[in-house]
View 1 (cartoon, rainbow, N blue to C red):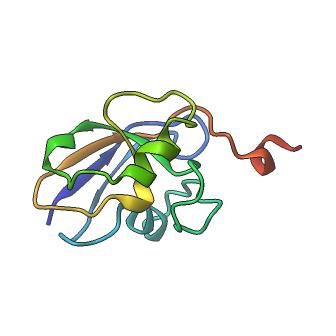
View 2 (cartoon, rainbow, N blue to C red):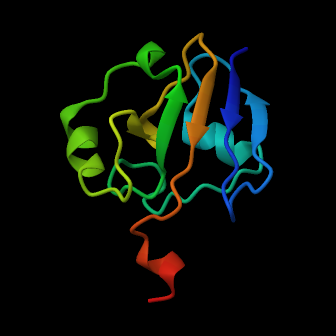
Amino acid sequence: MPKITVLPHHSICPEGAVIELASGENLCDGLLDNGIKIEHACDCSKACTTCHVIVRKGFNSLEEMDDVEADLLDRAWGLEPDSRLSCQVTIEDEDLTVEIPKYTINHASENH
């Protein structure tokens, strides 16, 4: 099973983590199932950007994103060329290293 390395995030995963997910599993669901409480305001329906991650290793092993995901990512804080919505990432056979950005545009988490 591919190993997913989550780089440290100040509030979501301060120590970082290494988890194993099966090929075909959804990245956002896998993170949540392993206690990494990544934001997912739209319940993984591809309607927001709160589950935005940056794939630091293994990006090219992932299925290409569709136009809807690409358009949504344009609104994400800290967008980088290797950004993805974790709810749209299906784990393939390669290990991944992901970084959860410092901020999201989720107003609920910003106490508005």
